[in-house]
Amino acid sequence: MERTRKLLLARARPGMVLAEPVCGSDDQVLLPARTQLTSDNIEMLRQRKVELTTVFEAAQDEVSEPVQLDEATLRKIIVTEHAWFGDTRDNEIMAEFFRCAVNRAARMHPNSQ
Image (cartoon, rainbow, N blue to C red; front, top):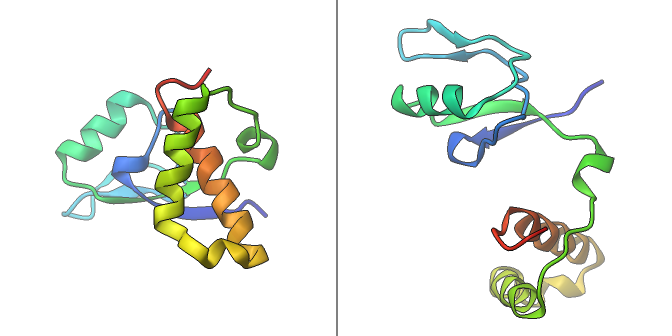
């Protein structure tokens, strides 16, 4: 069974695949389920004031690729994430969540390779 997640359109990226159809305010289907998002159709949805989509989650091996960042950039990401999570990282589950958040921020950073 494929896993899905709700996603703000602002966080949608080309290549993501819709798990459900996206409908406009008049209930007209704008994009059918299983459509692979492109920058053009993300922009079309934005113009039509769509705020939320449901996408299939990426396979684990797709999201765990290592990202190379310089020391200063990595430190900035970690400081920012620490401000969000604080001492909750002492909890094993929250520590894993923190690692995932730092990895995701690193992949989305413009200096990542």
